[in-house]
Image 1: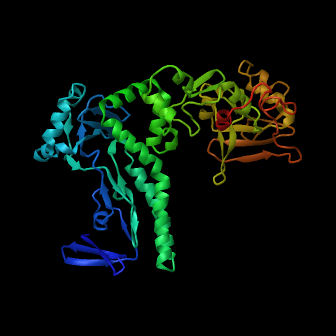
Image 2: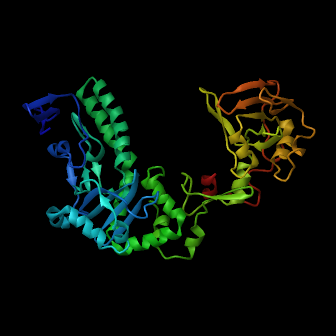
Image 3: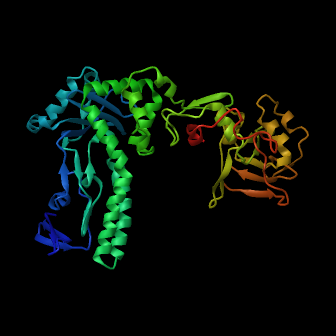
Length: 476
């Protein structure tokens, strides 16, 4: 494609092409520019805009036999650029060096020597590349910091890197292309179905607005990171803070990975925690990313959407609130190879799929039943009623003996031999191959209205002496 074709009203009607057979043209109602960072469509339509700062170029290649490459990607930031290192499988490692565009004259002379000399000049990287072998050509790309004032004109639209690409540090290109394609697909459908040109243009304008709503927060974060990477004192300060505060690092990774809203880091409190003075109020704002479950404790590595940097509900209130949530309580049973019965209470039970019929159980890896469930082809699931609360407490007690749990319990054997609680309870035998067999159901009784804790005499959600704050309610 060499140029865009327009009519007298400057509406795009097609593209001019050049191939082995000569020049030609292709007509279409809507032209989509998905031709990458140096988009011809964007430049021909006058939509491309390159920011003056930061201006960077990248050299990308693959190496074999790089030393000490783990399962996590690496970013090494220096005063004159940064390099990303990541294992891509089959013994290959991607190496991407990003340097200021002012060094383009050095790169144009011999890009291979420039990359290898840059790596050898770093004492912490040189030993790792001593025996490395480059297996693909060195590709140069850039400059970056490309942005369009708007992503459409009458008859054409831009998507992916053609519409916006700031810097490769955060690696946002794939998500922006896929999500942008989803937004544009719906807009193009409406534009083609429109009866008038005005309605068609309105659909493309809505696509541009949707892009800004979807990526606006991420653009702010990307530009902030780009500014920090270019300033040595700021990046050093941020690196020290994030190495000490795992919760802050998890939030930033979540935002750059597009599974945490950007608003979580676009806050004065978060910026103060990363760049401010340590101590004082910062320690009181520290988020506790810790989930306690009985005997064991787990530390979060991926922050959920509700994780806040400076306001988290305390563990006692959190347990009290969720303890008053009405949920299903079940007893899971299985038999070992010696024919002995085992069982435990599971409240984390829900339906997962209708076709094929599947349910979801959440069991602690430290539980005895965990290995038994994995090694046994069938398990039994008994859904308890409100009158069987004593059963749920007995099977939930980790100190009780295996045999004592079944004493005095009315049960029946399922088709797979597992014990199933009887009387006022729906029961089912659940094979391990994700198929279900309904054994018995008593519909005249309510299914499982038992609460975890006292049932009808439960105290108020918050004790009288505790006044819930807004932060507590948001966390709930």
